[in-house]
Length: 165
Image 1 (cartoon, one colour):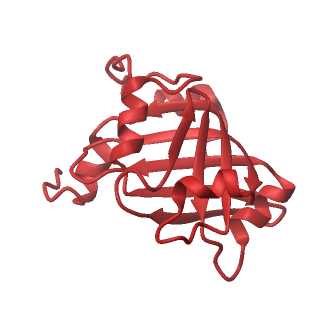
Image 2: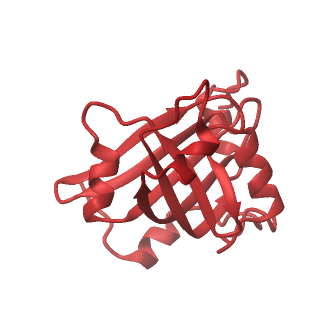
């Protein structure tokens, strides 16, 4: 097996992509399209790192409940705290976080990269309270990069019901 180690050689293996739309280009702030997508999302995959490697954890809920946009650079994500506490534990040692938002019937995903801190006070937990119970903690995400993806991956996966070859 031959491995590619040169970035130039790697680029030459891929077709030249078409131009990205303005909302597909990476941004450093949440734009109106990003905020709308987060509001429609029912699933977010949270990626964090620890000294032993990387982990991804899915978080789901009704539209408008998987994350709260505080401003154009800040997101709050409720964390119910699983038995392992892997995501929040990882953030104690390495604040880097990656988020992949998905919304029903949307052909695109939203990627967010940033850093996160863990908050446990009532102010942070209150917006997510249902029937008097809120999350154990809230991940406060400082957005560094955000972008909407193209439509290819979800179409190819068949998750939309219209798999393409």
